[in-house]
Image 1 (cartoon, rainbow, N blue to C red):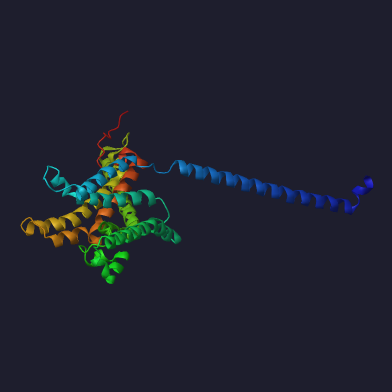
Image 2: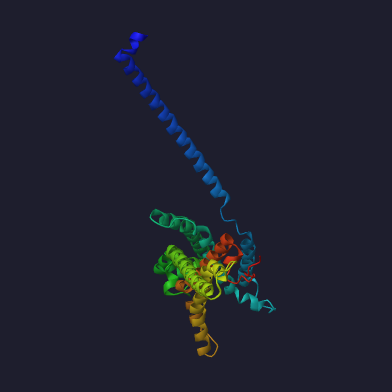
Length: 327
């Protein structure tokens, strides 16, 4: 043993064993780290699944009522006249509701997802793919029914059919109906769906601007109140205002969109002696750009609802709870 201690080969052997043990320990440590990372990824995914925004079941009920309204408007006989005739004649209210709700649901579902690089293409594929297929199928089925019933005169216009299947006809002649005429709503929503990634950015920017302005306002008011009355022992109203500055910005943005869209037609309505021509109705209703602001209002409303759900009642613009300090 004493001789081996003086043998250089003995120390060389020990060094090689130490290196082998070090490599083995490093491999075990790397494997443990990978396993820990996989567990964390699984927990994060499970948590994300649990914290997803809940399904809005109350909107399903409202959607049923709006659907029922539209169906009645199409199929209830006009004669003999009843008190419901005036309700049936306002089925466009339910249609506009669906346009706005489309914006709400789109933003509710996609506002928390990435919208850069290939993610935008994935959004378009998911949002438009099934809609296009279903609409083309509905148009084709309607065309076959029209041919079978001897009402296929408009099907002889190849240009009209091509524009219908490309969702372009409502842009040129909103009252020139395609096969299964109610598919005009898909053409009307198409520009809103295509513009949604930029719509989302605009809404987020408006909210951020409102928060910055509220923060600057609360900071200035706090400085003035501190200079005049000394330090305060409770929370300032400016601190509360800062929570819903972005909420007010969203409300004002929705009001501006409504005024821009409805106010213009209201001005024309009164300028013409409280009447609109049928052509003006089609261009203000079935022309696709006319529905963009309704969709935008729905998106902004969804962002406001998410803000309220995430930040609590103080984020709501019309929150009226007392903010005075209670010791």
